[in-house]
Image (tube, rainbow, N blue to C red):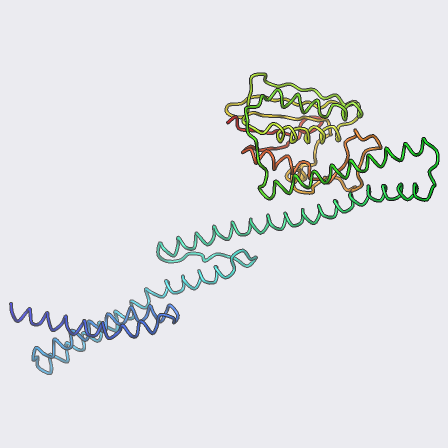
Amino acid sequence: MNAELEVAGIALGCSTAAAVSGVPLLLALRRRPLWAMAAALCVWPIVAVVVGVAVTARMMFLSDHDLRLVMIIVVVSAVVASAFALRVGRPVVAGTSALTRAAATLGGPGYSGAGRVPTTELATLAATLDATNTRLVESLQRERALEASRRELVAWISHDLRTPLAGIRAMAEAFEDGLITDAETTDRYHRRMLTEAERLTAMVDDLFELARLQAGALRLSLAKVRVADVVSDAVAAVDPIARARGVVVRGEADDLGCVDADAAEVGRALTNLLVNAIRHTPDDGTVEVTATMVADRALFAVADRCGGIPPQDLPRVFDLGFRGEPARTPGGDDDPRQPRMRSGIGLAIVRGIIEAHGGAVSVDNQAGGCRFVVALPTS
């Protein structure tokens, strides 16, 4: 037993010394390519085993013939084991290289993923890279769409601001030059200047509201609000506009339904939808607004007779600056009660207000027109 323990101790000491002597090599390879580190990790333990066997065999006082046989067996076994270890480790090195190449092209058009890689850890990392690339591409697409909407909005706002300002300036210069002398023309010009000033005020109000929504600065004063009151207030607010167009606005609501909401903001959103519906409904047409309770949500629906929205435009209806019409010139006549083509942000404001309440707004086509639906949680 003592001899066996002595042999075990000699083998342990020699193998440990050989293994420890490889630590500086591993430290030196820390910043080298992975294949170099993998090769060292595969080969050096085998070297430690070979040294332990060789020294132990030497100290056992074997004959030269037996010692040569032992060394031949150990060396051949070490070579085979090293070759096998390197072969098994090569796919891991190739997998990490594929992951590196995939990571370098994240979000770009050349991204193709790492493909099949060995080991569960590398496969998980490859799947994570694929998911990250998908989210990054979607984020870039949203950013490009938002930037395009902002450029479009700036162009349209610039045009829409220039039109009333040019009208006000022209009329003011006419007064300054003494070209307007009769009372009737003076009154007409005054009314027109007031109309243009109100248009500018409305556009500035829209921009301010949008800025608050995008900055997250909208502060909601939540309270229990009857859906019937929201509908009746919105219908009353658009009644002058509807009468001027000869459009009939019909409202119907659940008298017992209530929601936790900011009555002023929700009323503004519903009013924007009604004004939009009136603007696109032919004269003598009908706009219907309803409010119903479904499970834990209140549904406000505004249906018009606009003839429908082109299917390709439906996903963009609530985008910032989208109008769906090629013309940029504000509509309406001199009657201040007429709904006007403003900045193309009314529906974007609607979506911002409703989402700030934790709700959602959608639109779809129906027979003869389209239907906007606002869904608000009841609590």
